[in-house]
Length: 248
Image 1: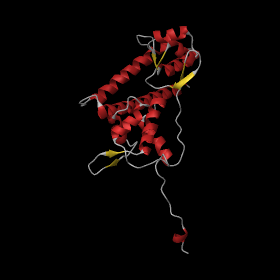
Image 2 (image 1 turned 180 degrees about the horizontal axis):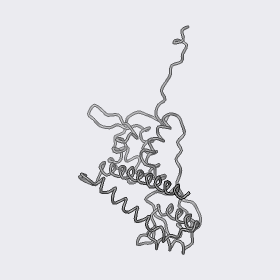
Image 3 (image 1 turned 135 degrees about the vertical axis):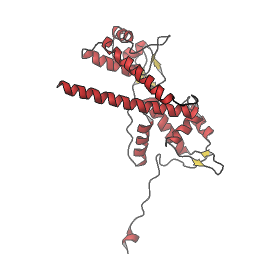
Image 4 (image 1 turned 45 degrees about the vertical axis):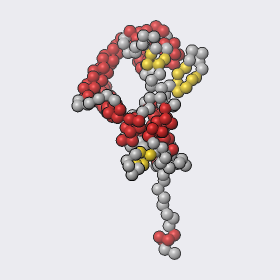
């Protein structure tokens, strides 16, 4: 028996998820309807954008129509959940999916969960959720006076009804940690102003030549905004580390 005859055939594993029907049977409209209950903001433009970024690769019919499978829906659900619950950019989600495709486990860090006033946990927090001042204090362990100081410094801002954006949780946690190191919230005002200037700069860059603010164009612009913001944040961190090294 030759070596070739004795060798077992090597089969490439199917992309994740395995064991899920891969028959291309759903239109893009049907996919949106499947996902809308869990992700109310989902649109056909969003699905097309995620296809462009490589999250899914639906089959095209002879007439050019997209056909999605149950496996495609699961990959879209994975991506949308990672964006909603863990604030992951597309690049990081693609890395996670590549790991899953290769048979590894994905490691997505869950975000904090909202705690109601009686301390009972509810559904995982989403980026579009808001929290009350009481919930914000409960989640971060700060006092009313400390929260008032953070608001006065302009680092977080409630809406007209007194609700804070969900992202305020991370901001307050960070500000609280710095306060314990002796850095008062009022000394951090410049960080908010710097963030606003960076956001204005990014908007100027990505606004050039755009025709509208809807559909796939909006999704692409949002992704590009996030990518540029990551680069700026990494640059700021590197510059700060360089300055700290000069202090030693």
